Every structure is written in structure tokens, then in C-alpha cells.
Image (cartoon, rainbow, N blue to C red; front, side, top):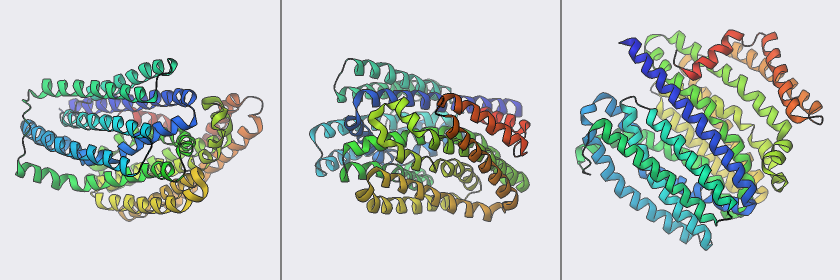
Length: 481
């Protein structure tokens, strides 16, 4: 029985990793195509429309889908009742949220084209929210295959039809309509899979006792979700309103290059969380070791990415996005430093959640969000997208410091060990950085390749991470040990 369960977890983690990597890769490629075809101003309009709608998306779901997963995992026989109540509730919240989005974009007095784009992205938001509920139900029976497949299929629809629309020179709203078609596909596919797997009859119903139970469970997660949305999307909203679409277009290049890498710690975090939850109850020593190892693994990945990107920012921008986006070099070099904190926040967040410290995690996000908003208000009017990048870096660093403080209270981190090894990783990454700078004028791709090999040799020579541990890192991402 245990082997069967382990096999299910391994398969599901594999699907999750496949989905993360596939979606992020296709999304990144399509964003490059978009940037090259649209130009800075239109790219700014496009990014703003999605950021504005996404900011409100949490109001539709309120993280009920996450609670649905947990409750169906315990009580599969209640799936139909839970689903019908959540769908009924979300029909109301979807309508109210969409009306709020429409009302606000008009109050803010944006141009007609921007309003149309926001109206359309609002429909994407609603369809994706209902798909999220159906995925939540399937996760409850430990079936992530269909979620992974539909995510990839949806992204393939976007990249294929979207690229065709760009080649034909079709107007910007057509691109958003393609997103609606992809979201509609995911909605129908996920709905059908839930119907097939659960044999449910969909009759939306509002049962006060069930909704009260679900809301009580969802509240801490909903609050964290709201803080997250505001944290990650207010910079784009402020830039759009205070500076303009061109600033959003420039900033979105730095933002996309930085945050598209989140799938790496997210995949590791997905594998770590169940192990940490188990160790919290059974083995405090293993809990501490798993945290410290994951901290080092992610430092080992994040530091060379950060310094390598700083060294190669001009080449990356010119090669991927063309010379129209050269102004994105400085914000990229600033924002990419946040990668260190973004990566390391994942094991910290996994540790706090695994040890029933969700409130502490939510508090940390809330503080970081508030600081980010204040910094955006102060810095964006003065420094435009550079100010937004500085705000992002400082608030991510603050989130990390607050989390590390909480983590240390839980497990008494071996600061000497982590400090020494992290310092050696940083030294190796700095030496790699200078090697890239010296040889990138000859050929920046070769400089990048040879410097990566040089960095790995230094890691082994300094005995920071052994070859066996690098293999373990790869295995951790692919399967649950």
C-alpha cells in the first residue's frame, strides 16, 4: 500500500514539474515573440490588461479551490456537495468581480483600447478561476495528469494561434480573444474530467453550513492570496497610471525574465512540502537537515543565475527582444537580484506551512506587500521602471528576512554551516561573473557555457556540494524521495 501511495506521489510530482517547465517555457517564448512584434507601447497595454484583471482574480476564488482539494482528499463522497456549493458561490463572486473590474477601469479613465483589453482579460480571469476549482477537485483524488496536460494544451493554443495573429498583423484585442479560447478549452476539459471521475450532477446550490465550513478553512489562505496578488501586480498598475504604457512595456521585460524562473524553486517546494510535514511530527533533526539542504541547493542555483544575468543583461535584451528594449537593461540588473530572495523564500514558506505557521507566513507577505506599495508610490514617480525594480528587490529581501527569522525560531538553523557554505557559493559565482565579463566580447554564449562549467568545478573543489548531492537535487525535483 505504501509503495502504491509513493508511486502516486512520484507520478503527480512528475506531472507538476512537467506542467511548470512546459508552461513557463512556452509562455516565455511567446512573450519574446510578442515583444518583438508589438513594440514597447502595445506590449505595455497588453501586460497592464492582464495585470489589472489578475489583481482581482483572487476575489473570485478566495482560495476555496485549495480547501476543496484538502476536503475531497478526506471525504470523496462529499465532492458533489462541495462542488455545487463552490460553483454557486463563484457564479456570484465572478459576476461581482467582473463588474468591479469594469467599473474601476472606467473610473480610472483609461483609453478605449485599454478598456476593451481589460474587459476581455476579465473573461480569461473568470474562466481560469472555474478551471482552478475543477483542478482542485482532481487534486483531491491525487490526479494531476489532466491539469498538467490541459495547461500545456492551453499554452500551445495561445502560442500557435497568437503567433499566427501577430504574423497577420491582427489588432491587439484578437490576441486576448485567443487567450479566451485557450481558457475556454481548459474550462471544458477540466469540467469533463471532473464529471467523468466523480460522476457528479452539477446543480449549483448554496448551503450555509457547508459554505461556512469552507470559508473558515479558506480564510488564512485567501488572505495570503490577496497579499500575494497585490504584492506582485501593483508595480505594473502604478507604472501604467503614473508613467504610461511605454514604462510598463520596458519594465515587463525585466519582470518576465526574473519571475519566469520561479518554476525551479516551485518544483522543489512541491516535493519538499510533504516531507517537511512528515518530519515536523516524526523527526525534528531531519526537518532541520531538509531545510538546510534545500537552502543550499537553491543558493547554488540562484547566485550564478543572478550574477550571470547581471553580466549578460545587455546581450540578453538585444538578442531576445531587440534594441528597442535596451532601456530594460538596468531594471533587469536590479530586479534579477531579487531571484536570490525569491528562491530562498520557497523552502522558508514550505517550512512555515508544514509546521502550522501559516499565520506567520501570511503576516510576512502582508508586511512585504505594504512596504512594496509605499516604495512604489515614492520611487515610481521619480525613477519610473527603475524605481519599480528597486521596490521589488527591497520588498523581496524584507520578505526573506522576516521568514528566515521565523524559520530560525522553529529549527535553530546552523548559521555557521550555512553562512560558510553560502559565502563559498557566492565567491564561486563572483569568479564566474568575472570570467563572463572577460570573455563575453569574444562570444557571449560560449562565455556563458564555459563559465558555468568553471562555476561547477569551483563548487566541487570547495567541497560546497558533492556530486552525489547534485544528483540528489535533480532527483528531489523529479520525484519525492
